[in-house]
Image (cartoon, rainbow, N blue to C red):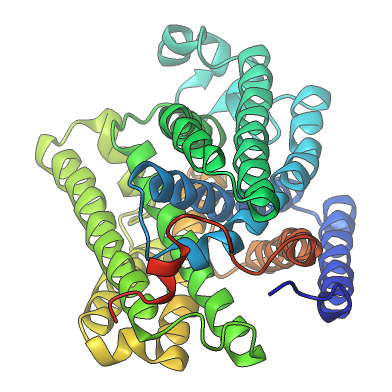
Length: 414
């Protein structure tokens, strides 16, 4: 049931090499590209994307334990390996944190009191910033970012240790311990992911108000983890590792969760848009206006990106996941997972990159050189995260062989 280390050594080395190349290209662009601000925000997209997937895996494990689920026992171990990426994600976030101190306002404008706002004077004289200064300052930002990663690494270590140790001694106390870890971990994870989304992404345009932003980010985290789980399941099934372990019912169950979170994402996103559109308050509508119109009233590229997100993030996966056959056929649900992961990336671009503006205050177009730096950042950070997963993969059993509910999981719905 254990996996030889050499079976993942070559893929791990390849993933790390690709990741380092992606990071090197991004770093080179940061030094040589004329629009360095765009490179920095593109890198923020890459780090946020993979951090969201890792947070989603943490959430799936916490929900698994708190609900005492049986079907997901044989899948849970792969999410546990995915948690190994958190410490590396912290290392990869450090350049942004260091840049915030060396050059305040370069990534997050509110960090520089002399930053000139288009049509609003400077940050230091902006009444909206002054009202939020106790929350939006570089000291709080730094401390909170350290707290976020410390909480995620700590929770991950506790969950992994209890799960991996149970493989050796089979003591049921580890199951109870992880239920306790999950009971305290769920509110911690919910609060940290919410504040991370607000600090890292939403504060790029700090004038904007939204009470649903953390829930939007949570939906993308969960969907990213479920799609990642599907890709791992199909990979291990094709390799032969999961032969006789997972069946069509496991695919059906994770597919149903993918469908549920697709509807949940649509509900949250539509509710946010509808409430802001209906209230028609300038302090809130400007965020969407930037993503629809230029200053002269012409439609910008982000309007079409919004339509891609609407149909790609909801309509396409919703219709596909309604089908039982699509959910239980590995190569089809894998395609749905790839599609959803790509749209999650576009959704993050939609939330981050319009903060880049020209001299008229219009958002820079989606199809620009910044899109290339997004891809190099995603490849770079992703290569390191996949390497971390593959390095953790052979260190323990393929599935939690002594989990009290492993038998139920192996015969799920049969």
